Length: 318
Image (tube, rainbow, N blue to C red; front, side, top):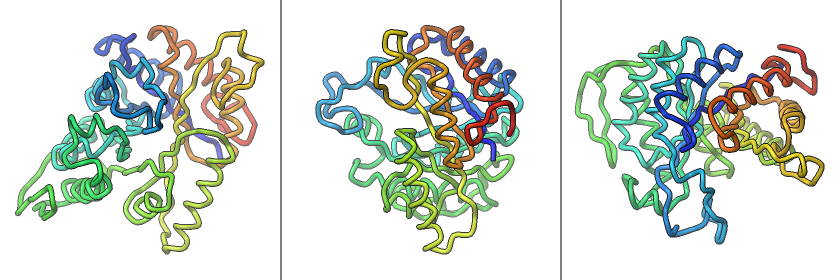
């Protein structure tokens, strides 16, 4: 099975939102990327209440000081493209009012002709929850559960009815409807989150931290799905955050997806052997501008086999 490739859209402060997002989106689609992706960072706390990912002492990267709104970014990309799917990896869902998020995603899917992938996570930032959370961070799992239920209700047939802790819909017509059922994919790395995914979602959004770790988690997820009697396939999109290193560091010990383009492609091939459907490549952080981002994205795509990465083989949809 060939692994498809997606590309992250430029959301950081070195880019011009209105100019560069449509430009990169059009170019990526013409290059052959199958999907375009956004992530969410609501703010940059200074000083932060906690370290990055909640890890004490780990600083937030400077590039998070200015991250464009994910839904605005996807809307710009939708208007500039025709084929590429439009996904989030991830929206910090409990920072959004459930009904409004469901309606916005439905509208975007209708406008784009059925190309939206709703990727949700619960997040970890105390500062983001203090500023925007609809409920305290301790309740984020319950909020995510309600968001999934509200999305399914709002995207389904009228009249829409829902009675939850946050959302109350007595009986209403809600449109526009999505062009097709929007897949919901979840970030998950522990049994509780895996159980939510198996029972209520369409797919999984892991982050690339090494072949053995991802392969182990993928096996755990499949075992849990079998244990709970799930028969529907689990969609998979692996996010890899790439960092291009100066030549002086190319031969040194490096983490996965850090190095020159050839080394990054080697890591892509190794991760493709796990059998995941798609790999989302985020190159925006180490690119100086949109032109460099487009150039590197095209080089990665070509060296990865024209978008078909499979079992160490290159040269198309092998």
